Image 1 (cartoon, rainbow, N blue to C red):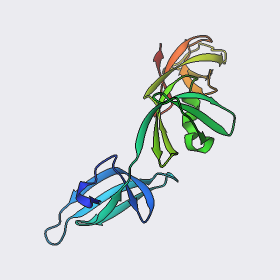
Image 2: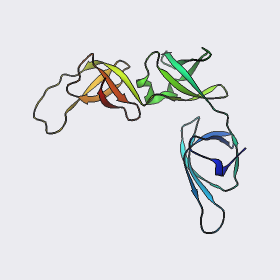
Image 3: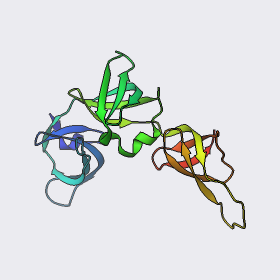
Image 4: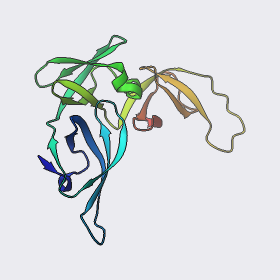
Amino acid sequence: MIDANELRKGTTFLLDSVLFEVLEYQHYKPGRGNAIIRTKIRNMRTGAIIPRNFLDGHRFEEADVERVTAQYLYNDGEFYYFMDTATYDQSQTRAELLAEKAGFLKDGMEVTLTVYEGEILGVAIALTVELEVVDTEMAVVGDTATGATKTVICETGLEVQVPMFVNVGDVIRVDTTKGKYLTRA
C-alpha cells in the first residue's frame, strides 16, 4: 500500500481497480484541517488525464509496472511488434496505442515499453530521431523576410516542416515531442 503523501511524478497506482500514473503532484496544507494532495493523473489504459485531489492519509495499492527495453521490429497495419532485448520475447500492441508516435518508429529502433500484467500500456521513444528525407516539394527561393519552410516526407511517412535547403536524401533530426525539425544530421 502507498500513502497519498508518497505520490510523486511517475508513480503508478490502482484506484478503484483502475491503473493510474501521476503526471503532476502538489502538496497543499491549508491553515486548518488535513493536507490536500493535488494531482493530475493519467488513466494508463485509456490515456485520459484528470485532475484529482486526495486527503492526507488516503491509501492506494501500488501497481507493479515494468519498464522494458525493446526493439521495434515491424507493423502489419493493425499491430506493432516489439522484441524484448533481454529475453528475445516478442510482443505486440495495437496501432491506436502509438497514435502520433508511429511516424517516428524505424526498424531496429530501441524503445521503452511500459508493461502491466503482460499488457503493453505505453511506448516511450527517444526525444530525437534521425530520419531520411524521401520526398520533398520544389523549393522556390523568393523575397522572404523570415525563414521560409517546405514540407518533406521522411522514410517512415512522417511529414515535417523544414527549411528550404533540405533535399531528398538528407538525414534530419526531428524532435519527437513536438514533431518539429531540429537540424540536419
